[in-house]
Image (cartoon, rainbow, N blue to C red; front, side):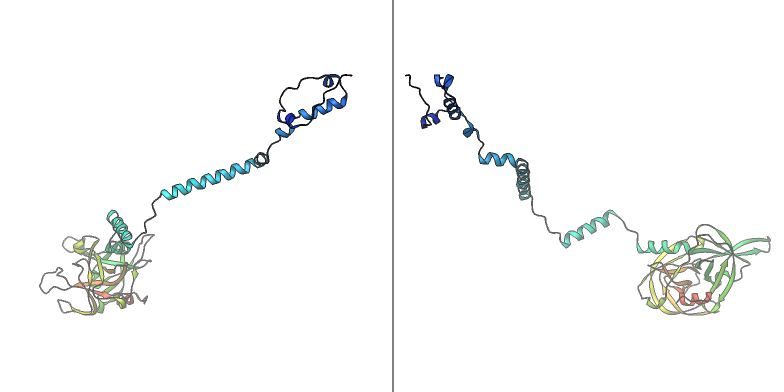
Length: 317
């Protein structure tokens, strides 16, 4: 009887799983038990099974990619941040330098310019018209200034600007010419109130301000039509308060006047004296000149706006 060779599960057999097995009669034509035993010994399932790490990576591959990207980004940001110089602290010197640079590059309007822009729409030219007997013609006898104080066309000016006029005309800032009637007088303050017959649609009255807070040295401008030229602007300061002025003819004594040194000449009479916020504090009424010449030498007088407003009938103070 021929002996059948059986495969055993020895270490030698496991060490060479891939070696080709020589076919034996038992494998080709033996019993089913011998064939099944040979098949179980030759299976590579133990070696092909993935490791625990590979299974974890395969299962969480997407999450690991995201975490890797985040970690790389953090590393790159840390490297960039470390390469940057620390921000320098801004000092007051830096701020001052920036402000000076801005002022050098951008010229701001002066306070006088702002004050004039505020009062300009309210200033009017006042013409005193009269007839020439020898020619039977009407001429302009004199030019003064006025300021609109009520948007219905109520205008303040000096009494001596319109005294003796046959007719009075006013010219508004937009060029509109209108007849005007004298509707009020205050001789003790050399003031007259005019009512224009025709007024612009967008007439702007002046802002009036009490003189109670006026201080010596405070800046002011005088706006008017000196010698018919204008509107003209001159600037100066408040030189004194509660001054008196005696007219050269001795016909009137004005009291409680504001003294100022902004240039004023014939034609400025009746115009506004204006502070830097654009408010009217007085009505220019006279200049002082000890000679017989009628021009400005540095001393002008204005009626306080409280007195001027009372000439209109109602005071805003």
